[in-house]
Picture 1 (cartoon, rainbow, N blue to C red):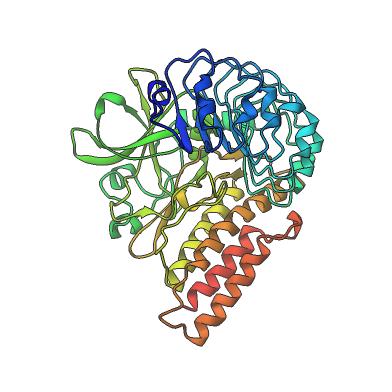
Picture 2 (tube, one colour; picture 1 turned 90 degrees about the horizontal axis):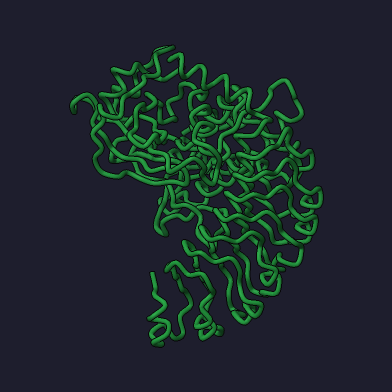
Length: 477
């Protein structure tokens, strides 16, 4: 974090990035000294209500974060910023957006946790718009003109007032990651799932006394399975938190000891009442309904009596040998994960991971549930190529009896799977040589992957077909 005093002393001359959080109530004009070079500006955690009319002097600015301030409208001057592509005003008090406030190169818009009841129709004139986060507002509809934003890939509209999803949204050619939980459109299904959790009946892949004593990745864990066990209500006082294992948009995951240290588990502590994806109780409802699967990090219990009333879940502990398949998207990649430059897979492992994810996705959609965040960064892979998927923060329910909507939502998620599948295939090690059979399998896999990207949503295969084809290819290895 930089300081205003450093800026005033000229110590930050020529900087391309600047982050100031000092309780500012007015925009520091000293920032204009960086007009020729500044590309990234973070003014989050201040008390700003406006930006100066000449803010566009920052002609090189590409990224602006103003989370946790006191803006009541998106500043009009942003529309004059010719290079600005990412705008983040999370957790302000914004009630309105005028068309003039939209930058011409807008690619990434974050307005989570505001008080928006509508968006301007002119948002449809933002051709580069690719990623939009609107959870935790007062929206009941989106302007039909947004259908013109044909590059839109990720949309978060959880915890709003949608009675139904916009019809045009289901045919967007590049939409892949859609999160809409915590809306009236899925409230009934969420409520039923939470009642099920409270009654302590939920499908899991192994008995609680087995999975809490073994890690994902052990032979015993992968072999054990029963049909139904109780979802335990686990008092906070019975957990001893250890090291932090990871962190996502909705919460922080810790390793923990349960029952005096006799059992090792993972504990997800939610960050607050609202995340970029939606509400904690929506995630819990989805996780409860996901059921049993060997490629899923299984849910063991719900924490009770947290001293601050915070929601938390207890899950299987993943063996430390497992690692994230990739890092989350960067500011540059926007919607696509970032992989280690030297990461390579052999073909059998790549197909095995893809098959496992497709199999799990098929099961979720068989239960009227979309994951919403099928990504490599939510996937952990072991040394043997076995992988597990977690993070149900963007998962949402849908009515399976509405066949048109149900199929469209599944085929939207098929494109997300296609992105992950494509990334795996791009990293298949070809240097060691492939047999003729493997080359044929790789070609067939690439053709299947291409089908997942069909511009017409209805032309994409369903997960049943994808899983069956990948199962066949995997057996050939």
